[in-house]
Image 1 (cartoon, helix red, strand yellow):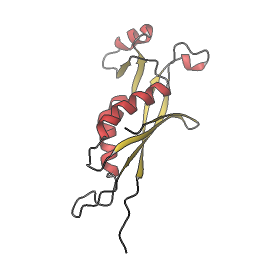
Image 2 (tube, helix red, strand yellow):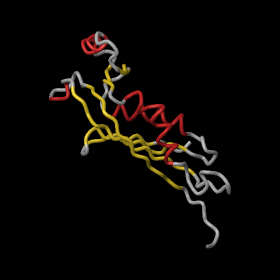
Image 3 (cartoon, one colour):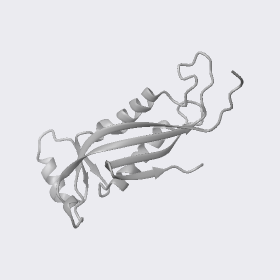
Image 4 (cartoon, one colour):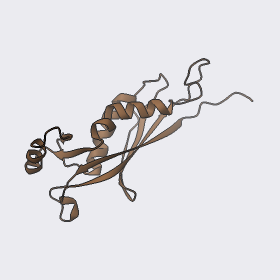
Length: 157
């Protein structure tokens, strides 16, 4: 085989977690306490690593590392938690009255758009240049249902 070109490459890792929320000002069912099976897709861009002897040789990033970092910095905090807007006082007060309840208090309404924005900000800092191959978070897609999602997209620096 000949020499490989090092074209820009993207890889995507998919993770799932469960969380509850409510959209207090919503005019339909979403104003009630409910939950979702969220699906998170993390798309990273970077150069393929070409270092003989490196465990990531031939990869943009090892998929197990993509997963481990997303789990550590985001999914473990949100999985089986209730995501609530700080200003939603009735729900905040109720959740804080439950001993040991897993609650994540946010500074915004926990819509899928806001959650994707928060997740992108968290994970962008985690992945950026962590492998020495110009690694960056290019896209984060968060599915609230199989048919509804929000996508946060990174911009070139």
